[in-house]
Length: 127
Image (cartoon, rainbow, N blue to C red):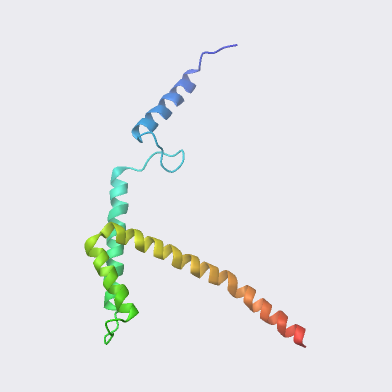
């Protein structure tokens, strides 16, 4: 039995070891190479600008004559304070909120056809 590795196997082992060392012992994205630092900075900058833009747009859509306990105004004030105190937390909060909104919309799209089918079925049973 031959225990000596082939040159290609040795090269693959070396590349795997070097990539783990470069990623700090962890690989991001499964077996793929870790993201470049410039790509990470670009993504973070894009998320920061997107979050700030979303807060500015929401602030411009604020009700004109809202009272101090108006829920819309309270949310806008909270987002403004979040932007000042912790922009990173604001980005994470908006990311989670957008995900929840997307899930709610997707669930609504899945339920809509089923609800119509049940209504039609119930109407047919009454006849």
